[in-house]
Length: 176
Ligand SMILES: Nc1c(C(=O)O)ncn1[C@@H]1O[C@H](COP(=O)(O)O)[C@@H](O)[C@H]1O
Image 1 (cartoon, rainbow, N blue to C red):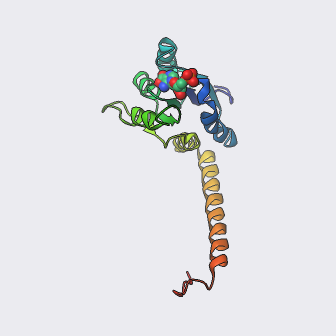
Image 2: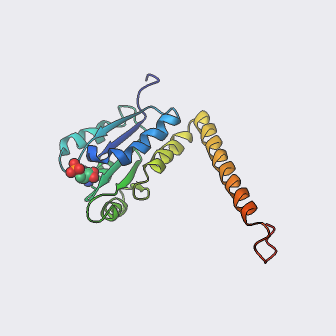
Image 3: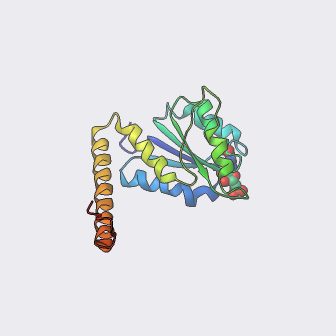
């Protein structure tokens, strides 16, 4: 397999999901994880979905991310066609703003698991895929650890600024 062969497949039910799903591609790009991005629909292109799911592992994919809105059957149907881990992203749209997609994706029958992230949180889907890959990739695990440390530093910074702003105002002897 060449260096550039995708190991993560990002799929979505429509190109209208792209503004949300782009965040998954962005985080994979940042971590240097080869990925592909496809529009695949359980309802509108069922045969393409079946082909994608059945060939994903033999094409070298390790994880599939699937985002869909409304009656979101894409992640579950992909999970039915493959043994690869599937991460579902409920895309917010329409009258129910993602609640429908969240329940469609999370409420899978026993035996066909789909990992589900929060409504619209494609970034976490990307990060979860990276965590899965990192279990067998020490370089990637190191990058994840550095990213986590940067987040800790950022929050510590915020804490410093908030504490400085309210220092001496608490009246409860708040010294932390
Ligand atoms: N939920 C699904 C599936 C599927 O689950 O296979 N295919 C398309 N869709 C969703 O329909 C919404 C509206 O799509 P359009 O914007 O194309 O009308 C999108 O959020 C898409 O994910």
